[in-house]
Image 1 (cartoon, rainbow, N blue to C red):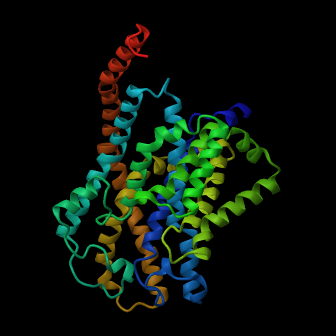
Image 2 (image 1 turned 60 degrees about the vertical axis):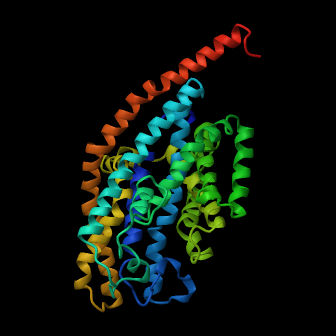
Image 3 (image 1 turned 180 degrees about the horizontal axis):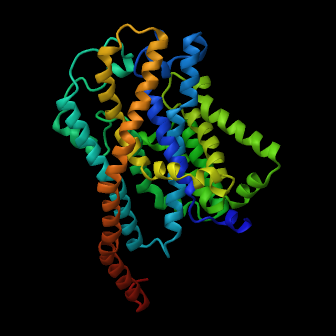
Length: 400
């Protein structure tokens, strides 16, 4: 057990956690569709201002906190990317070329498929005009056909107007490009701590460079867990139960409630990103280093983890297609009826998107991931040849 805590190479529990987080995002968005008790934009309403049904909605939005789930995704990505680079012998040009090919094959094919599928729904299903039972948030989507430039930007992750969750894929793409530098800057424990402090300060001061700057702290935290977290992970996992459970309870409380209590009217407030990022780091470290047998052994959760990218990327247009189909039957609903409609919409969306994601995983993700792995050495070969030639020239004294 001690050896497993020291250096796990891969954790099925992490995959399960990713699958659960993807499903949480689906439920979160579903809870925002039909207006409950006059809450026109519920995830932007202050907690104290909404008694009664408002408190129920706030409680559900905290329990199924999609924004916190996204932070968990970012920390997980930092951990997994660090593990992948640690398997490489060096970070020379050939290794980096192969890494970028694999990341492109992982992120972009499904993004292209999701964009194409969304466009089909926009052209064939969604109609202009307002839906009275929708919240103002929901009523703003899919009311007009996008132009060619907008479609192209969505397809490569530079815009998320067609599929709002794509904004996080843009962050993932940016982090993937920068991650070799993050990996180098976390090579030693001291350097990792310094990098984490700098990244935290960048976030704290609201420096969201090009829309991704404030989230880099999450990827740095994930890399730090993978490379230097064994000692702290062991202390957490092996701590007396009251201590360990208290730490985890506090982390979950921050994960679920920080945004609701501190800055509900601001999307991803920098201080919330920091607090939730710290909580997510604790939870991910606990899952990674042990005490997560149920997550690691559940076939259902492992499958959800395997399909999580598809669940996350495909759910929004599916959700709205179902919402538009249900809207004629949800007219002037009572708060209980509107909330029931949102919960039913969440269940229906999961029922459609999970098998769809499984199919897309088999037909798109798995083949393109394999293709990326096959192409990576071939594309990296010229870089390896140039690097080897440079080293021979240097050894011969031609370069100083």
